[in-house]
Amino acid sequence: MRILISGASVAGPVLAYWLTRYGFTVTVVERAPALRKTGGHAVDLFRPAMDIVEKMGLLEQVMAEKTGIERLTMYREGRSRPIELELRRMMSAVSDRHVEIMRDDLSEIFYDATRDDVDYVFGDSIASISGDGGDDGEVTFDSGRTDTYDLVVGADGLHSNVRRLVFGPESDFATWIGAYLAVVSVPGYVGLDGRTEVIAGAGRMAGIGSVHGDDARAVFLFRTPRQLDYHHRDIPRQKELLREHFEGMGRQVPRLLAELERTPAFYFDSITQLRMDTWSRGRVTLVGDAGYCPGPAVGGSTSLAVVGAYVLAGELAAHGGDHTRAFPAYEAEIGDYVRRSRTFAVNAAKRIVPGSRFDLWALGAVVRLINHLPVALTTAAAKVSSKGVRLHDSIVLKDYASTPWPRSLSASS
Image 1 (cartoon, helix red, strand yellow):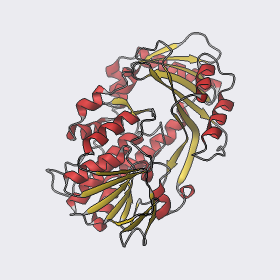
Image 2 (cartoon, one colour):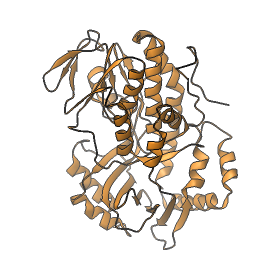
Image 3 (cartoon, helix red, strand yellow):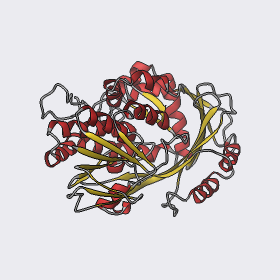
Image 4 (cartoon, helix red, strand yellow):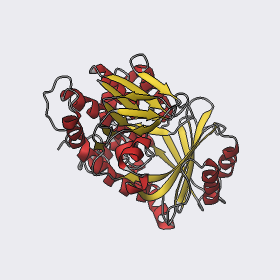
């Protein structure tokens, strides 16, 4: 059975790994001319995704590439004294098993684990999928070639081409949740050594953290009262908007903004949530951000994508490749996880960037409280509810190799 996956970032290679393990023949098509090594930003893997990584035999490789950032130094506009936060204290409240890793490093690990068993086609993209939801299986590519596949999966991110072709324009499903994120690769000229330095103001926040050796990432988050007008591929306009919203901010910010002219990698996007009632139509389905992005930087979308890919492959195997049964089972299996991630992301987007001077003061008070509470007490308090910060660890994965179908993926008590 031949399956075409669009997208070679995270969800695509993870899905390809499990599908080939179950005996499917997989092709992955990627618009970029080669595996993306453009710097990327740090992403988090929480317990369920880490468990999947371990099942894939890739835990050692992932842990070797962790960012190693352990402390955060936060300055607030108008105040000279910084606040220090030991990140372990905060992350232990979120998950018992967690790693922060650069997205491109994670993508490369997944690609290397699948490259010998999967047909990767770089520098091409899907131009059309025949029939209603690919019912006749014919796919035409931008290169002009055509081919026939039994199933097509969009794993091509928030601005998914497959979703546009099969379900309609992005505007039909995307909901902006109030903020913007930019990531810039910069020289590691600040002596950070496992530390992130942040400056926060009302409605905006900028920081820099070391990655590997002399490499570093500058991260910008800001709020606006209304959605900005720009195209997601218009990089000059995005840089212009970034300069406008961080004008006059002190400390490292002017130097970080100066790097915009020579950075080898730049990422800018709205913190947008996808809300679809279903992410399957005919022989086509979506996985990861293409189908259910809770919001970049606020919803644990990378962990959700890894889990979604694992579940989709498992349900296809459990149903013998019958998509009419496997796709609904896949959606039912991760539906609760998706919905709770959306709710969490909306709340996080409201809090991640202080909206006022009072919010800025409150942020400092919360950081000081975390610093003074014992780690065990912070973790115990977070475990009281699986609907909040512990939502990822509350997910129980189905073992498709040994557990008879069906058994629901559910929140633990």
